[in-house]
Amino acid sequence: MLPTESFPKVIICHCTNCKRYTGSSFSANIIVPKSSLEYTKGSPKMYLDRGDRGGQVMREFCPDCGTPFTSSSDDQEVAVKSGTLDEEHRLNCAELAAEIYYHRKDKWVDDMGNEDVQRINGSMG
Image (cartoon, rainbow, N blue to C red; front, side, top):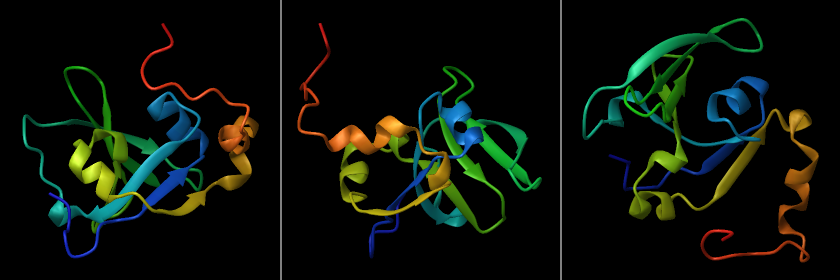
């Protein structure tokens, strides 16, 4: 469940570990108190990773399909991968607050808003 008094803003992470963890060029996250996070079905698996500064990062993922759920380096807050939220909650978390590890951003990410980019509703096929 997400806090409803004020929906979390999105934080984009461009660090190498998040790119590898998500299999993408960045990770879109919302930061919430750990106490507000509740899994509605099943229990995630977890592994410990190392952050850029050497600290531990706990990463949770679906044991059935491997979908990454969260990353956390402290006991108070957790970064929830925004793509794992149901549509209603994801739409409420529509404001970008920050991009971190910006210096590691893939160059093409700047061009996502380019007017020459094809925008397709649905698949490529």
